[in-house]
Image 1: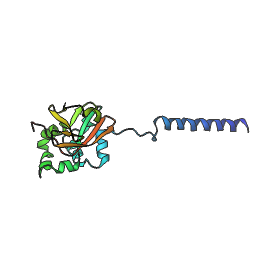
Image 2: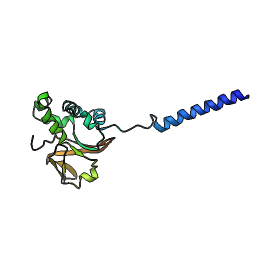
Image 3: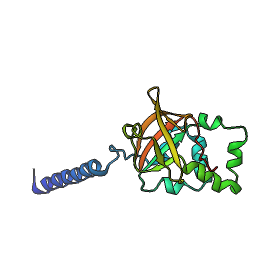
Image 4: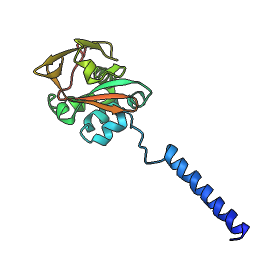
Length: 171
């Protein structure tokens, strides 16, 4: 093997090593966690929540650094509201009320399930407190909304899934 062929082989291995290292260091095999909004979109069971977050202008906030804890109502939870409620809240003139309801589902910080069970209340981003109690081995918010899934980790917080939309006392 002549020197030119050796150099070409060494150069080829170096290039391969550089590409391999870059793939390992920041490559696609290592999936980064999605933020709260992208996680909700990907789940497919929060379509109403995502539409409401968009209508309230809260997408950028919930894609922000956080961390946030979101008690996320499913589409079925929103379906429990009286007929016409969602459509009414999604109107531009009701943006402030919608934002108030949505931010009532958000707590600053990353509160995992093991921490939630020791709380009796939590101050929401909206400003009012949500009541928390442990009942029959599960967590219940404001006496009527059950936490049905916990600790869905996102890049900027955590999501706990709830089965009923919770309303702030001032809405």
